[in-house]
Image 1 (cartoon, rainbow, N blue to C red):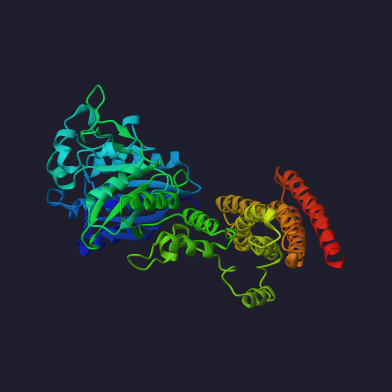
Image 2 (cartoon, one colour):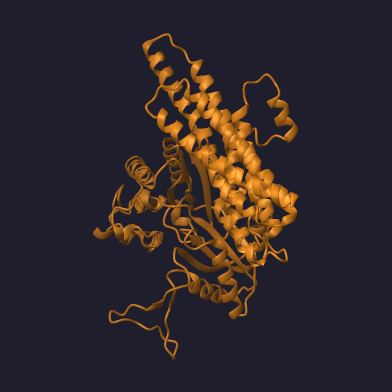
Length: 557
């Protein structure tokens, strides 16, 4: 299913009734999953996060923008956050099965509706921008609401949709920026000072924009055109400002991570700690605004475990808890990863993986056709990867294995990633089979019914082949990791051997499922599927045989 995230920011953070009316309008759209509503009193701004199909995302965004235009009067608005409209920004973010280009098209479609039907001036930004000059949100929003009168009459800043005039509608609603962008993390670092100048300096030193250079007399150094010359900050793809938050009685460095893969959260936070220390300021913790991708938290957890000299190939929950504590995300209040991490809000483990071991085996032993061998094969794969990661963690830090620590760290991290893939496929295999049964039960009274049924059956059959094939090919990726584990802590040598055996069971079981599902498949990709399956099984069999032979020798020598 295609999934888009939408993160409209509304210029109201103090009136709960207005906020509820806006979010109710969004949530009322069929197919919208409202994930987070984060109001800020000092900023007088609410960040709303929801996910939906592309079509529902546009409808939900339009409903929220229309309600905000009705209830928020920008001529009366004050707040610490830069803003230019009742709905200040409304970005679309690709989440699953959607490209950035598709999200840009959604932004343009929404802009046309907002400008045409609501009469609100709209500027397109980032991936949806109509020109390179408009990609940067800060430039689009320069002058804020108070500067719109001049901006809307400047031909260079004519809106991309809606009227180019500061009429009664624009006076009330302001202008809205609609765009498409990668996942943005809104994040605040808490300082133990009320000195805003300190916070602003720290923000300037780390952000991409940097800080203005000054001469010995404290005057700003300017270029030939009179513009201030800046020293670039420590990180790219980072925007930051310093401000005072009255409700916390402290300052913060408020950050937007526009690409957390380029400038990771943990690296920026640690840099702020170093810079703050030079300014005599202490970082007391952090605050997340809205949601954060799980990848960012896992990366942070691995980073801090590495710093401790601990093997970073830990389970996801351990990594996330390590990140929470290390970043100080509970400094200002509770932090619940099931609420704050976007993947966990969309949906965590599947129904089978969520069962206890007994529940799973009891269901397996019932007369239900699923779960079956395909799900069991995937579970074997998860256990093989899990054993490899365990051996790695039991080896790192162990005296006598110093030369293997780096390899064990790398192996355990990779094994945990593969483990999560196997676990997802425990449910995916059963879901594919259930979809096939559902397709077979579709009506076939009319020609249209028959055509739709044939199409659904074919799609479901391909899924019943692709899932076990994916499991099988992933098992081939596990084997080199188990080979590394077999060099690890000798007291866990048997665990490495069992890992090789469960991997072999996973591979052959998955191969059986590919073959049996290919029997009824007449598509042209059949030979390709079988060739891939045979090649992967051969790889796993050879690797498993070599590892188990070595383990037997080691245990009986």
